[in-house]
Image 1: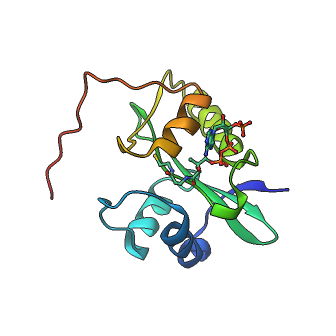
Image 2 (image 1 turned 120 degrees about the horizontal axis):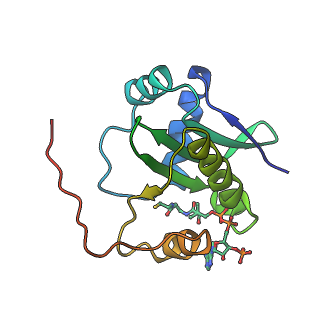
Length: 138
Ligand SMILES: CC(C)(COP(=O)(O)OP(=O)(O)OC[C@H]1O[C@@H](n2cnc3c(N)ncnc32)[C@H](O)[C@@H]1OP(=O)(O)O)[C@@H](O)C(=O)NCCC(=O)NCCS
């Protein structure tokens, strides 16, 4: 049975290895030690991990920036999917957001990631088709 905890700096190599096999998004920028260290330094409770048998089986970043509630790196190890681990992670993230007074959580989801669409829909998330993400490299 998986349990949840927040990540520490010691977890970073395992987290990066986990995302290589479990996470989606070919457009992602900067999954490296410096980036995850910066996240943990800035908000030590944002990176949630699901652990089983001492190994990472799931992850979710529940980022609250003081204004909005953003979810990133929602991933479960392929051999552990459809066992409720994703739900466990989302419930914990939403609970965290509620503690901050957050009213709405959001996630960036690739249009062709139908697997993710099923999971987000099941958790009550819906698409806002009127929005597009505007980005600029820094
Ligand atoms: C998305 C993901 C994290 C879901 O994790 P999970 O642990 O399998 O999710 P859960 O077991 O909690 O599933 C919750 C519900 O979502 C729906 N769901 C999840 N996977 C599904 C699938 N393959 N087909 C249909 N429905 C699915 C179901 O309603 C499921 O409830 P049920 O199993 O009781 O029917 C996992 O599929 C994953 O890691 N995908 C690859 C990475 C990714 O695309 N992440 C999202 C980035 S936006």
